Length: 149
Image 1 (cartoon, rainbow, N blue to C red):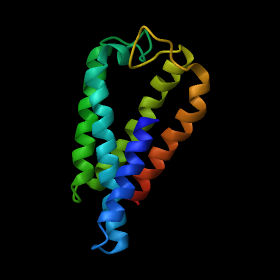
Image 2: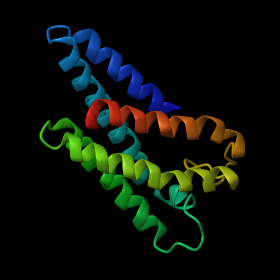
Image 3: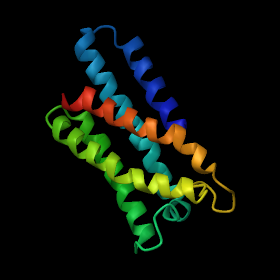
Image 4: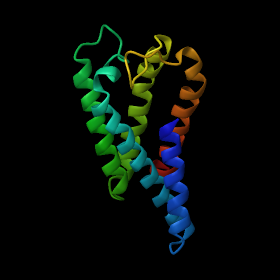
């Protein structure tokens, strides 16, 4: 839920304070920068909660902590790529693929009631997917609209 708030607050703030630019250009800029800020916010979790986030990865996959760190680095690179107009399109395509690729980890975590911030607490379980799956597709749609189309 926190990433959604970050995304929307940054987007609205950029639109409100960026009124000196034409709306379409300002809208695209705001959408991409808001996504970049959200990605930087979520990337922090990959380093702060790396052990707990590693539990989100199915047991049969090795090097879980390394995967969490690599995906955090990828999120930082995606944030940078969205902020550069010349790389935005290809970054957007790569980010959409990434968002599809990480969805199974979120489903696994929900099914196993994993709390990615604290392994000693129980996560929300399957009911979380009623938010997470639509949110994931919302993010994919956001990236497509602001970066790819």
